[in-house]
Length: 251
Image (cartoon, rainbow, N blue to C red; front, side, top):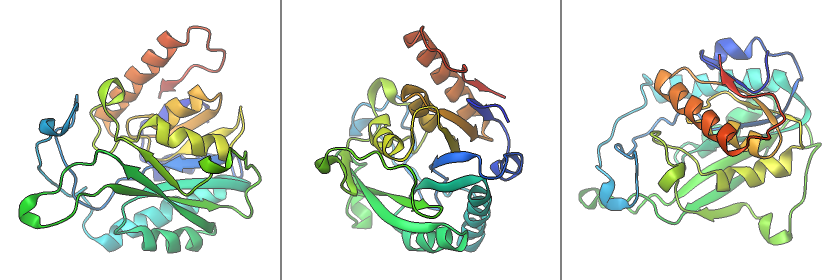
């Protein structure tokens, strides 16, 4: 498969076309089986949020978890020995995800906590605290081969940052900030390595790979998100006119 390419297809179909033990890092944000806030395009502050909710479309939790397990089994086949993986999840599913990564053959390593300093406000009528934490499960195929140690105070399993806002914000419900993703990509991969993202979404993993001189392969089935990714690729190339790598594209 071509590198620096997002394939517009179901990831379970697309993953089968990737060679065994060919990927250096997996970094992905699968759809969550939970409710989310809507209407976040051009988000500047919490007054812009209209609090509506919906499910992501899975018939049951069991069906959702089986889907994630199937994807991770394919990822295990594709990952090189020593490759790391990072998978975003909500706190209500993290214990399931920890077990699933091990069922797929990986070693669970650590849960990383992202503290969102400006989370969506809680709904008063539901009498709940604001959801200010999101979790990133770190796993690996055997012992990680690449571990680019940063200063000690940057090697905690905790990172703090606002949610994606301003010019970086695209019309995607769970877009992760580049600031939150890039440190882990730098720690667990080297320049020119190949990063896999089965759920590309708004393209953050791909953009982070380009910014750090890595390559990527991704899958995204949603046409609207593919348009967002294409626009982000254009923006990146305009801002980096001397980019020497293989130019990114949607296929």
